[in-house]
Length: 158
Image 1 (cartoon, helix red, strand yellow):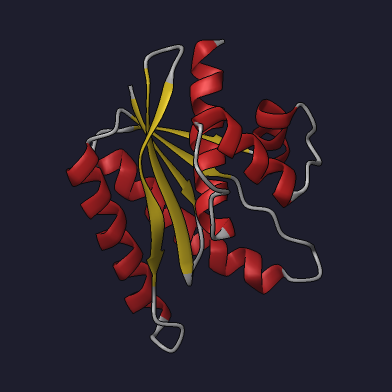
Image 2 (image 1 turned 90 degrees about the vertical axis):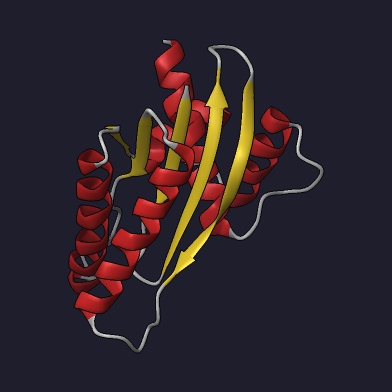
C-alpha cells in the first residue's frame, strides 16, 4: 500500500510517500511544496491544491495521511489560515479517490517513539532507524510528513 503523508502548511507543506506491505516500509519520495509568502491567500491555496494533485497523480497512493491542526489559542489567526491549507489538501485527496486519514501530533509521536510528547530530534532519530536512512530527515516539515505516513502504516497494521 502506498501512503502519502502530509504535514500541512500555508507556506511550506512537507510530504512523504511510503510503501508498506504490512511489515517492511520503504520511503519512495519526500520533500516540500512551497508557496510565495507574498502572494494572496487564494493564490497560495490554489498552488497547494496543484502541488498535492501532482503528487497524487505521480504516486497514486491508496491513502493520504494528514497531521491534525495544532495551534495555541494565543494565535487563532494562524489556526484559521492553516485550516484553509488543510482543507484544500483534504478536498484534493478525496477528489482524487484516496482514503483520507487524520492523526493528532501526539498520536503520531506515540506511534513512532512510544512517547506522545517526543522532541523533534527523537522523532527524526526514530524515522532514521525505522527506514534505515543514512542521515536524519530534514527539514522538519519533511520529517513530520514521514512521521504521519509511518503512523498511518502502523495504524493499518493494527
